[in-house]
Length: 296
Image 1 (cartoon, rainbow, N blue to C red):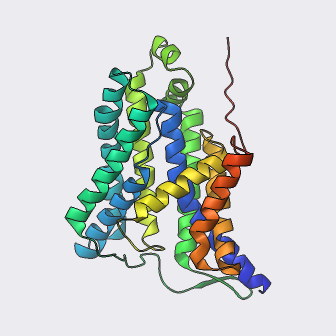
Image 2 (image 1 turned 90 degrees about the horizontal axis):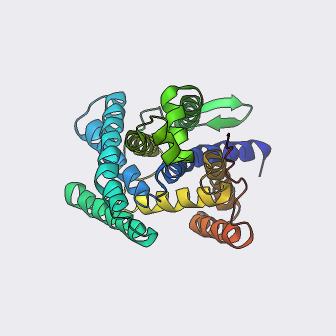
């Protein structure tokens, strides 16, 4: 393998890893804000993929319009999910197993709803980013969608970081995450903050779905794939740590891409489950643990 090929694979792996990192980040945000694991996060990605396909391919609307509509729809769908499922379970003081089963049921419902609406045939979205390779270095050619995926994913992550760090809404969401009761006593509308986190997480999943059309076939099973990758990324990075989730997704994408090249593309899922098993057995806290600073 030449150096140019290795660089191309590395950049491609980072691009795929960015697609894994976005839903992993969404799962981490919901876990911190509400203490629940959104098992249906992958189905949110799948639904967004089909929505973009409908608006962009079937209705022939511009890609940016299809993207914004999918983002808006999934944002409000995330809020509805929190207000119907999560709040009901909280009022019941439901045990964790009931919460997990509820989200598994939601994922199954969404998969079957998608089957009813769009059928079972795999779909493809025309590459909206261009199909002519770009030479970035000598003999190193990258497809335009690779750079677009990286650029958009990194921009979204930076925007989320700035929002959580420097805006009043972001600070309120962080306060809700660290101590919900204390935040409520300080005047924070914790219910609204949790709903907003669910909406943002769903919008991030929608962005993942919109970008994934340039890389993957759109199928009913892709939700399971993204759920698995996002969960593995969280375990690698440290469950509950948003930065760790992003880094875990990038690591998973690179290892998968290089492993598929050196071994076989048929073993991509084997690589994922091997990494998952390794971290669960030997480093269950992941690479980074969540640090929470308390001030008196």
